[in-house]
Image (cartoon, rainbow, N blue to C red; front, side):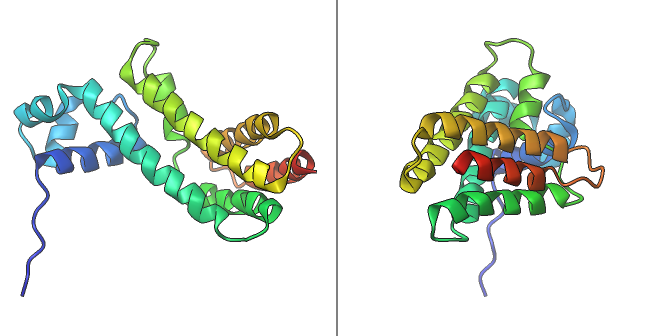
Length: 185
């Protein structure tokens, strides 16, 4: 019988921070992070140089996971228009989930007022990658203005994630889907 190895301190810090930053916000204290990860303070500084480095690493990791989610959502159809509209159907499922807490990138940008904080570079990199994914899909559709349409769709996605965080029984992704259809046409 083989046993699954216990993750090391670096991985435990990343997992704990990703969970806590999403559920409680990026302003969660270092002591809570260390307790959740069951690591010594020294591990935080050895692996990430401090909390700022951990925040940036968590955002890079989450960005990869979130973009994989978008790719998976797009894979639900073969025709480009249906792929893009289906994305909003999946967003509706996401924001309707009781565990949904909103857009981690928007929340992170709000949590750190200093524009030079390393988190801002990571949130911007994520947004560039998402926009590139949208441009790719719009070019496959043969849209006349893929860059502009990607900007509009991105706005609808961000708005859905922000509005979805209110958990008020509304379905912002459904309204966004209707607007997306107009952009695609």
